Figure 1 (cartoon, one colour):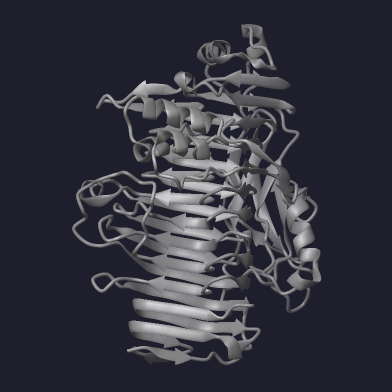
Figure 2 (figure 1 turned 135 degrees about the vertical axis):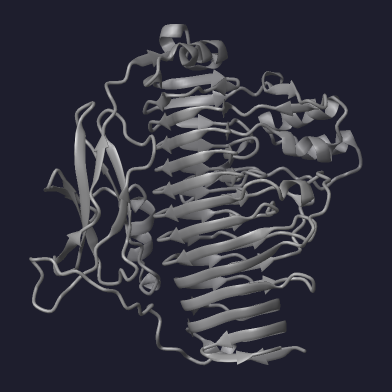
Length: 588
């Protein structure tokens, strides 16, 4: 039975949390402030002159304006005065009068610079109130910089940065010669290359004004898999490697698509392929002629006998790291991949810091795919993509249910501008996607904010997700969507169906602002044999939205939802039970 409800105005927006606070000796009378916790340095993030610090903000951080950083017992910096990597986007957003009620982003990371190679230091962090009152210190950690790195310049191996010379052999030789703890340096210039293979205990560093440009020749990426079918390597690859670092402020350009003459707020826009004509190869390739490496790789795969639907998903990616550990990617720009930008598969402990992913509006231009892996941190990064921005996968169907889940993920302090979904679980969900914290992100112009997608044959699902303290603006479709009926028109995979349909449960969305959606503000649609449950929506402020849709959902809560125009809100609820709205439970 279907019922339609109109929301009332709710005055409470901020989360009220009872927290035991410690008082700093410098505190003013009556003022206390909670301390940060879990101070750490991501694996492989320290180099010979700097150390990266990240920490958890207190559960109730509403009274915290910044954090002070201490090295060896003395204050060395503050997040208040540190140069934020995304300030060119975040500062104008918060300066605009129309965004005065948007959730404010709390920065809880810091890079300590100017250190000596091989030096050991202790660090702690303190919360600071607007009045300058400090909290007690966080946990203290001890961290060392790396020894002086030996440098292997690719130009010493004959590489030429003239955009035309193919440098694959020269760059790979520099990588092969790199000694443990050393770095391979890409100097200024445009260095065309085919696939490269990283190894353990090395850094690939891109100097300012340096570009690694993917060759447009599909022959350089192609190989035969175990079944004899043609596939393509990524531009940068690893397998069974540890302590891999890609750093520097240069660019990795996938040469996948032609670029539009227009930009999106200064960011590049790539021309989408139009894969709508199915009348045969000549017409199909005619509509596909805007691609560069993307077109060439699909054509090569089709020439080998594959159908378009089989060939299209096999285009080369930019970075694919498999069965690896302690991965650190920082500071560089990824642009224009023929397929996805970054794929991390079957791996442990990866961190992305100050990455710029510019793939909008390239077909399937996902920013990051993290699959069958454990331990990911993404912070200070920009995503403007032609598909999902940060995506998690865990296999499809019955056989993949035996794999380990994709888990333990922390996403914070990012600017996500374009993409199908900002934070995405699925559609490959069979071994479960779990334990995700996404907080303090600014999300604009994406199709969805939190996107959870699966289908009956895939199985598994996603659980234990906390999406909090994020600001969403101008979302094209739903702010939050949970669907059990996702289908990919380009997918050609066949697999045995899972023993149970995919579901989403124990997911909390908390303390977020949502300003304008093109579709339902919240849409949770299960199926008769698999209802979603344990969904919690708390302390959310909605502007310019009109619908909340629930179908085959149970045991879920809605508390302190504030709407700027409550008279226009429609609650469309069907096949639902135990739905609690501001303390009142109902079945539908």
